[in-house]
Length: 117
Image (cartoon, rainbow, N blue to C red; front, top):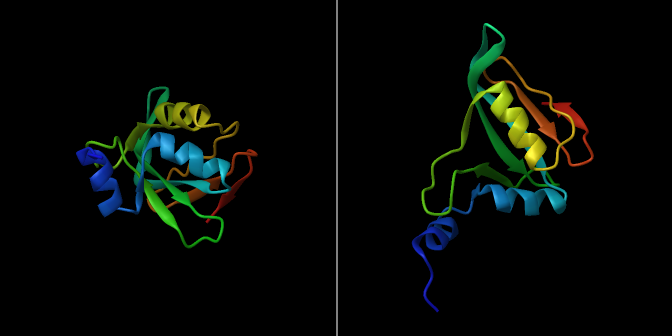
Protein backbone atom coordinates (compact mmCIF):
# COMPACT_ATOMS: atom_id res chain seq x y z
CA UNK A 1 0.00 0.00 0.00
CA UNK A 2 1.39 3.36 -1.01
CA UNK A 3 1.29 6.12 1.62
CA UNK A 4 1.15 9.79 0.79
CA UNK A 5 3.90 12.17 1.82
CA UNK A 6 1.74 13.73 4.57
CA UNK A 7 1.22 10.39 6.32
CA UNK A 8 4.92 9.68 6.15
CA UNK A 9 5.77 13.12 7.53
CA UNK A 10 3.34 12.69 10.44
CA UNK A 11 4.92 9.34 11.30
CA UNK A 12 8.33 10.97 11.22
CA UNK A 13 7.04 13.90 13.32
CA UNK A 14 4.97 12.15 16.00
CA UNK A 15 4.68 15.26 18.15
CA UNK A 16 2.30 17.04 15.78
CA UNK A 17 -1.42 16.72 15.14
CA UNK A 18 -3.88 18.07 12.58
CA UNK A 19 -7.29 19.53 13.46
CA UNK A 20 -9.07 16.22 12.81
CA UNK A 21 -6.47 14.39 14.87
CA UNK A 22 -6.93 16.89 17.69
CA UNK A 23 -10.66 16.21 17.77
CA UNK A 24 -9.95 12.50 18.15
CA UNK A 25 -7.44 13.10 20.94
CA UNK A 26 -9.86 15.38 22.81
CA UNK A 27 -12.45 12.60 22.72
CA UNK A 28 -9.84 10.35 24.38
CA UNK A 29 -9.30 12.76 27.27
CA UNK A 30 -6.53 14.99 25.94
CA UNK A 31 -6.61 18.71 26.74
CA UNK A 32 -6.23 21.57 24.27
CA UNK A 33 -3.61 23.98 25.56
CA UNK A 34 -3.62 27.53 24.22
CA UNK A 35 -0.18 29.16 24.37
CA UNK A 36 0.33 32.89 23.86
CA UNK A 37 3.44 33.34 21.70
CA UNK A 38 3.11 37.12 21.27
CA UNK A 39 1.39 39.43 23.77
CA UNK A 40 -2.09 40.42 22.65
CA UNK A 41 -2.76 43.98 21.60
CA UNK A 42 -6.15 45.64 21.35
CA UNK A 43 -6.68 47.54 18.11
CA UNK A 44 -10.07 49.19 17.90
CA UNK A 45 -12.53 46.43 18.86
CA UNK A 46 -10.28 43.43 18.16
CA UNK A 47 -7.37 41.69 19.86
CA UNK A 48 -4.31 40.72 17.82
CA UNK A 49 -1.32 38.62 18.85
CA UNK A 50 -0.02 35.12 18.25
CA UNK A 51 -1.40 31.93 19.77
CA UNK A 52 -0.77 28.26 19.12
CA UNK A 53 -2.62 25.16 20.32
CA UNK A 54 -1.14 21.95 21.67
CA UNK A 55 -2.76 18.64 22.61
CA UNK A 56 -1.72 17.50 26.09
CA UNK A 57 -2.21 13.85 27.06
CA UNK A 58 -4.20 12.81 30.12
CA UNK A 59 -0.95 11.98 31.92
CA UNK A 60 0.49 15.40 31.03
CA UNK A 61 3.50 13.88 29.28
CA UNK A 62 2.31 13.38 25.70
CA UNK A 63 2.32 16.71 23.84
CA UNK A 64 1.43 17.34 20.21
CA UNK A 65 1.60 20.65 18.39
CA UNK A 66 -1.29 21.60 16.10
CA UNK A 67 -0.20 21.89 12.46
CA UNK A 68 -2.07 23.19 9.43
CA UNK A 69 -2.35 20.02 7.36
CA UNK A 70 -1.00 16.56 6.68
CA UNK A 71 0.78 17.67 3.54
CA UNK A 72 2.44 20.79 4.94
CA UNK A 73 3.66 20.55 8.53
CA UNK A 74 3.45 24.23 9.49
CA UNK A 75 2.44 25.21 13.03
CA UNK A 76 -1.12 26.51 13.02
CA UNK A 77 -0.95 30.03 14.36
CA UNK A 78 -3.90 32.21 15.33
CA UNK A 79 -3.41 35.96 14.93
CA UNK A 80 -6.73 37.16 16.41
CA UNK A 81 -8.76 36.24 19.47
CA UNK A 82 -11.85 35.93 17.27
CA UNK A 83 -10.11 33.34 15.07
CA UNK A 84 -8.89 31.40 18.10
CA UNK A 85 -12.31 31.41 19.80
CA UNK A 86 -13.97 30.28 16.57
CA UNK A 87 -11.46 27.43 16.29
CA UNK A 88 -12.01 26.34 19.91
CA UNK A 89 -15.77 26.35 19.37
CA UNK A 90 -15.41 24.31 16.18
CA UNK A 91 -13.43 21.61 18.00
CA UNK A 92 -16.07 21.31 20.73
CA UNK A 93 -15.17 23.83 23.41
CA UNK A 94 -18.04 25.83 24.82
CA UNK A 95 -15.90 28.20 26.86
CA UNK A 96 -12.73 29.99 25.86
CA UNK A 97 -10.09 31.40 28.16
CA UNK A 98 -7.35 33.20 26.25
CA UNK A 99 -3.98 34.15 27.76
CA UNK A 100 -3.12 37.65 26.55
CA UNK A 101 0.51 37.85 27.70
CA UNK A 102 3.45 36.12 26.03
CA UNK A 103 4.17 32.79 27.70
CA UNK A 104 0.68 32.45 29.16
CA UNK A 105 -0.92 29.00 28.91
CA UNK A 106 -4.45 27.77 29.49
CA UNK A 107 -5.83 24.27 29.02
CA UNK A 108 -9.35 23.49 27.82
CA UNK A 109 -11.24 20.22 28.18
CA UNK A 110 -14.27 19.15 26.17
CA UNK A 111 -16.41 19.51 29.29
CA UNK A 112 -15.67 23.24 29.11
CA UNK A 113 -13.34 23.34 32.13
CA UNK A 114 -10.24 25.53 31.84
CA UNK A 115 -7.13 25.79 33.98
CA UNK A 116 -4.20 28.18 33.88
CA UNK A 117 -0.72 26.69 33.84
